[in-house]
Structure formats: C-alpha cells, structure tokens
Image 1 (tube, rainbow, N blue to C red):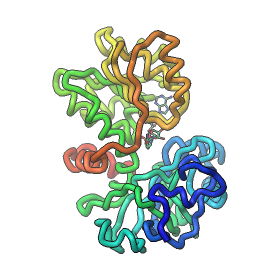
Image 2 (image 1 turned 90 degrees about the vertical axis):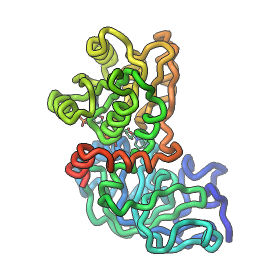
Image 3 (image 1 turned 120 degrees about the vertical axis):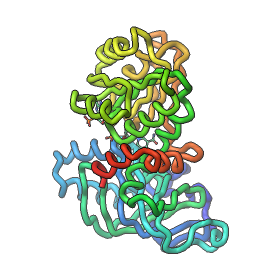
Length: 343
Ligand code: NAP
C-alpha cells in the first residue's frame, strides 16, 4: 500500500502533517513508499535536550525515562515543550517497493536523516547510552523515512560521530554561506556552540578580509578559544538574554556601527532582541535557534522601530549537507575541534 509522500497517512486522529501532529503511528511495517531504518543513535536537538536535562535535574536515568515516555506517547521524539526533534543515524534495513530503483539508497547503506525527529516515526527497543555533553542517545530501535524525507549518506572519509554532529545543524552554515556578503560585519550569538562555530567559519570565508565576524560567547575562555582558532575576528563576552549589554558590547567591537547580519545560534529563550538591536536598518537577522519565538521577534523589532529582515532557520537549504561536510574537510581546525568535542 502507498502512503502520502509527506507521511500524513501516519497521523493519528488529526488532519495535519506529521510534524505538528500530537501522535503518529510508529508501527514499523512499512508502506510501499517508505524506508525502514535500523537506528543506532539519535542526536537530540540542543534546545530540546537542554530542556529535558533541566526538567530531569541532569539525572541520566530520568532523562532515559523521559525520552522513552515521549516516544511511547507520541510515536516520535518530539519534545512537548520546545516542539523540536533532532536527527538520527542508522542503516537502511528495507526499501519500500515503489522506491526500489528510484532511490539512490541500498539496503545496508549508512545514512543520517536530515528531516527532524519531530516528524519521524520512531520505536526505541532499548536506550544503550546517553552522552549528555553532546546531546546524543545511543539506541536499539527502528525509524521510518517518508518518500519526501531527506537524508545524507554518511561520508567515508569522516567518522560517523563527526558527521552526525555536523549534519545535525547543517542548515546553519549553509544558510550563512548564502546570506553573508563580502565585507559584511556579522554577529554570531552562541558562537562557541556547534552551529555557532560552523557559522563563524562560513561567515569569515564569505565576508572576506575586509569583513568582520564578531562572536558572542559566555566566557573569556570561549572568546580566547575562538580567536586563537581564527574562527572569529573578534569575540564579545556577554549574555544573549541581555539585549542592552549585547548592543553596547557589539557596538564597541564594531567601531560604533551596527552590524549587517546577525545569526542566532544559542539554545535558550529570550534572545530575540539581542539579535535584532545590534543590526542596522535593512540588515538581516537569521534565527537558527529553535528557542526563538516569532511573536517576540516580530513585535520586538516593531517595538524598537527596526526595519530588519528576519529569516526563520529552516533546517534545510539546498546542498546543506555538502556545505557542512565540506567545511569539516576543508578546515583542519574545525575538524580537530569537532573530533575532540563531539566524539
Ligand atoms: P550548542 O552547541 O549547544 O550551542 C549553543 C550555544 O549557545 C552554546 O555555545 C551556549 O554557550 C550558548 N549560549 C547559551 N545561552 C547563552 C546565553 N545566555 N548567552 C550567550 N550564549 C549562550 O547548540 P547547537 O547544536 O549549535 O544548536 C543551536 C540552536 O540551534 C539550538 O537552539 C538548536 O535547537 C537549534 N537548531 C536549529 C535547527 C534548525 O533547523 N533551525 C536545527 C538544529 C538545531 P554555553 O556553552 O556557555 O552554554
């Protein structure tokens, strides 16, 4: 039997797409246009993992139970508070009859799904390990990719964990490459995080020698690290939840000028105004953070009379997996940092 290519046939009791659905059918019997994946690890979205960790007082057993509870209830790993998911890696176990020959995938291929876990039918048999430092959950389980689902075959020249870590945030560096122009001044909030560092790298490449990349981080240590590794031109230590502080410090680091572009890569709420205030009129704000609120951004910009363009961080942009993997191939610095932090 053929299902809807967007997966609506698996939505239970609602007339919506699988992502906003409360519950989806995670029966692992596949339709003719679905792909079955034998899952080895989940990379939980950072905003989601942070929320779960806090709710469970950083107790790993409680985090395990919470994840199982969510997946058993919703048929997918969608954090009920943040609404966000993450992505997974696994091996192709079965390809639906309609996709055989059409898909470039073969049984046995190792892939990372690039659609969110918040819409992916998932069944967890066992949680083998949780690595809280890198938001990773190793499991025994199965998942389903819909016909419209995007994925990346895992590259052979990079380790699986490295690829998984980078692909999780692939939308951010690829969008950065598209929006940053030569000579731009670019502010990156959360510059020391996973997506932050990848964005710094792409922004510096695009802005060029006359451009300026300013990284906002929380500690002097992170600031020093980013500068020493030449990921930013300058770093600002501040709290992204304090817009006045951010504005003053960014102006100081940019010859008293507002920046052309701001990219928000933090994983906490209430950072909309710190992204908007330092940007010049007709500049651009790119909200990659999943903790962004549309209302706060829209009303906030209006409230301070800022005519800025705002982009919602679509996790997907054409070629995003290639851009991200290539950044790791090109930059030994990034590769070393990611290998140490995320493996
Ligand atoms: P990450 O590695 O955890 O990085 C987040 C960074 O934000 C960390 O460096 C953290 O600093 C910093 N930060 C937190 N609170 C801060 C504050 N008050 N002031 C300044 N910096 C602060 O996260 P990630 O994996 O890069 O993900 C970043 C965001 O992107 C998350 O919200 C995630 O949910 C979202 N995301 C979006 C998509 C999409 O499709 N749009 C896809 C994947 C992820 P510390 O290290 O000091 O805590």
